[in-house]
Length: 635
Ligand code: SF4
Image (cartoon, rainbow, N blue to C red; front, side):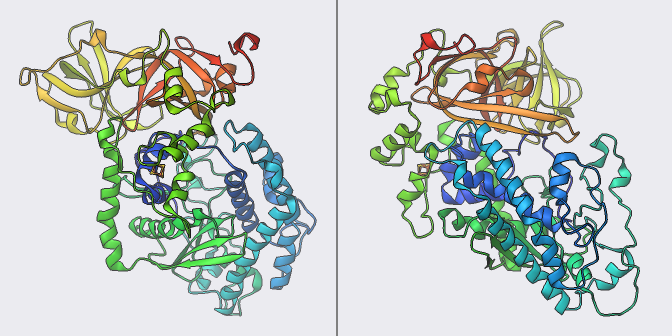
């Protein structure tokens, strides 16, 4: 099936601990770039194409979820109706299509409204994005342009319908005629309820949704010639259902890799994995298409189960809507797939081992983009301002891109001098990192839910009746040693100190270890003296807002920024309930003083969290206004 249950990992964003297709592509482009972008989360400015790609994909798959003839030709597209006010959008009034032209006509009639919606949604997203390419604007994208992209996607799918019709419906025609879509996870359609990977977490829903009743829409059990409408339904790919807020991903059985396909064609009895691209394949970004799709091929095959109707992949394709092109990529052979098991696992291990200690960072090894030089790769890299691999000139160019106008004329050294931490802040490098702690470990070793909603293991470390602290894995599966632990006094080395809901915590990962008390002579930090907070003064060099819906249907918001003190960067995060106007207004180029931030950890790296009660954030200088003119809410 093209989706699975998350074995580990929570609802807030994608886990930074699993290998994904985009992570792999970024790793192959430059492992150090992957570290800054994916592991540290230091992202560059957003451009209109990034927004467009996501919404156009939603619009296209929504058109593929339509059943031509279900409604009148001039009725609203179901995608629009669902967004405006979803009530099972099936008001009848149409006629079943008798030809490919009928199907095409039905879909084309819906394109203008969908394109207008893409432009409307994109404009909103662009306006809300906190870090945009300064020289770009959403107005570059027109409705005509979006209509052409959607038309290209429809025509590529109609080619599949034609092939399916010519092949007499493929090997599953009789199953279709008996009971409808025979796949365990059916291709989503507007006229059917959405299927959630974890239905028991959907409010007002029940498990029966997982075993959706198969409708008897194709009553015919005869051997008659396939109709065009049947060919449309059989050729319809599995797509990511826009109504499903839970992750629709495939998870490697061992939990270390995951990926979310865009589309999966299955009518031929074997799978073809498709990735939808809104560009024309000429940009440097398309260099990673082969790795991305081959990774999906590998992941799809590694996640087959007995329930899977299809266990072979026969093709992997990128559909470039900008040029209406199918880019067919060679699939990995059986031998290559076996080699990749080990190779991908070792990449994941190298990713996991990279943490806050620079010694562990992966090497800077930029590769050339399509037809361009290696230098071009670095020129596009937001992290070039802190990269010690690139020329001084390129690094300075990167620095200028993030500096506010008042500082753009300064040399790197002058910038570093200006950014020296002012009272009461300390340099980022002295934020408490690892400690050794000692005590009796008791309590059940997990499972518990961390603040990202991920299932981790935890226990309690105590040194007396009144002195105890929760010990937990930094991320799911990162420290399994405690599982078989008998009670007793233990020394935990290289633990990461932090705080959650006003109480100290100890986080453990692969760098942490356990020895019996007294076996080693190392400096031990007393539980009552664990460092849990930090004050930081730095320049905002990255800014992001992420919104989504948790597995249980509740909305979440997370805002992040990265502060740079001239030498080091650190991520600052605030969750929905703690977001203030001040934080929401922070932008790249602001100089910010953060006091009382709570120390936390994400994928082996320290992270500062804003607590509404204990943290204070001040914008110390903003480029376009002297500080004394700033409104109180920002000062
Ligand atoms: S600037 Fe170049 S070498 Fe440095 S991280 Fe970025 S891509 Fe890699």
